[in-house]
Image 1 (cartoon, helix red, strand yellow):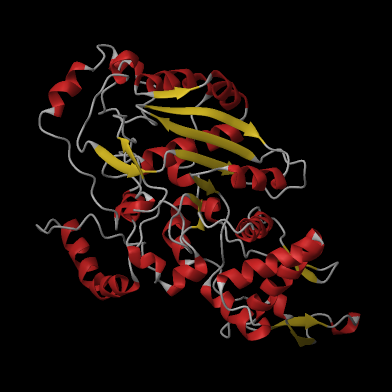
Image 2: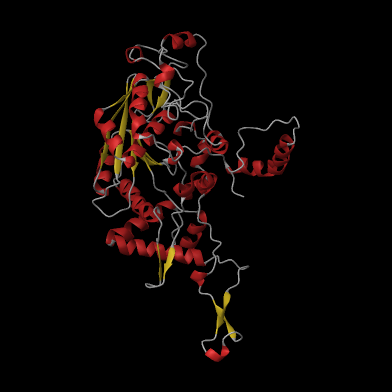
Length: 457
């Protein structure tokens, strides 16, 4: 048992509402998670005794965030000894979600949200803005044991490492973040430009050979207009690149999450400065600043700290998150918050007035809050059978997968070893035929656990 795994009784809380989730994302997040243990037969009797008579009215507006099939627990009953299913489970007892920002300091969108498991209650007592990334670093290092999720990419596609290895000898993830830290430590803006230039060379290393590399250029002589023209070659930055910009873990989310899975390698060419820059990329700069912080965390030398999944979980584990996985891109309106908070309180969640007030006023803080709630539900196995896999349920092969060790993985996205993916690729044509037959009315069974978008084509 790892240091972070503490014995704790599992509180009975409403499960995540999953009926509205896209079928594809459901299959992605559950494709390799272990099924949670079913409840004891006699638990249903106790369960029904705690159902509020007015539960359906209270939950009408909160249906998108609390499972409407789950009972409401009155607050005094939730404090009593009550168990459903296995008596105990192993999980983190403290959780932090950081809304990351790459803007110049003092930052306005750098958010810290924190929750703890206190007996039968889950307490959320912190939701605040932090002005500097240095303070975020110090706060993380001050934690004793916790799961910390941060919403920036921890790495880049494997093919980019191939270029770094060939050009600069940077062949592994730790060498890369160490180089990022060194480049940004000297001067942040210069370091960011340096990495944009590396990405520019990567982009130009795989230009599309099937696209014309020239265009017709008309003569500027007035008497040649209309007939005289010459072929002008296109500069590399004007040509289409075939270089891979997304990691393996990003692929199943691209169509569903949209801009939330924007590539951190998206760059544009500035004709004035004649160099590549992160033009319009809201994730490129934050990712580099975040990876520099990861190196600082490792430089601290704590033996109980791990960057997941490059390292196996420890007491203090840092993981990459994507808020969209827990919010599906929507947040409750201001008018619905009170009803939602009331239902969570009935279910054994204590959300302080300070946190509630911050969530009402600031949508960025509201997103961090509901991301934190989703992480807690995931790790406490409260999201139902269609929820995301907690860290302890991931296949151990993820820590030996060379691709994952380079590219990282998004917390909450299901994982399959490469050999299983290869088997699925072989079965894909057969499965497509089965789907077509089912649509034509034939009696065929389609496996719900196979995602059409879970594999890179």
